[in-house]
View 1 (tube, helix red, strand yellow):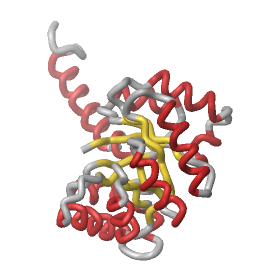
View 2 (tube, rainbow, N blue to C red; view 1 turned 180 degrees about the horizontal axis):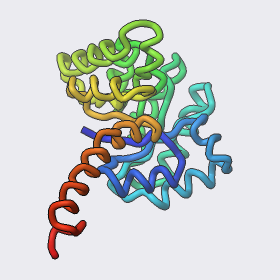
View 3 (cartoon, one colour; view 1 turned 180 degrees about the vertical axis):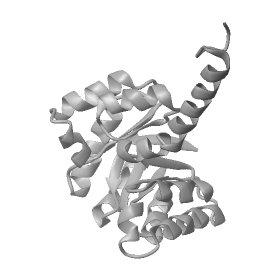
Length: 222
């Protein structure tokens, strides 16, 4: 299972990359704008920080087939390996996915709101699919639909992986990990709640107090 960070905040990326096993970073136009930096600067900093084995996903901005293909080529050129163009699954995006895959460009199909659209993107060759879990929940059982998509890929033997996105709660992430999802991209605010359970420091304090009362010290060895 791949744990991916859904942010372009370099400080947050460094924090969780030191703490956890992070497979990569996903960005989109909204995430890039939140950095307050020029996109070229924000992307250059991410590329400079990430290790070669960590993936970086960058979304196209143009909406025509020609524009999407052009920007996908640009994205692919930014880094020699593990660089993915994120392409929304509009009609133009689906056409572009077919074209750029013919050129060997790695693709994450994004802005997916239904398992059927995701499956069609997989048939067009997308390497990853990003269903918007929380947004899908606004229209029904988002978690269940992502599980349906996973089953559809498995039944038909498609190699495309799901990287579930758009999380607003720990429970959403939990349910998909339990279901065997292959990757999740999680924003720092949700990941923090997964890491920092309030019960853990309480337990640690109890252990420390008991030890100090018994032995008069706070270390294992005297």
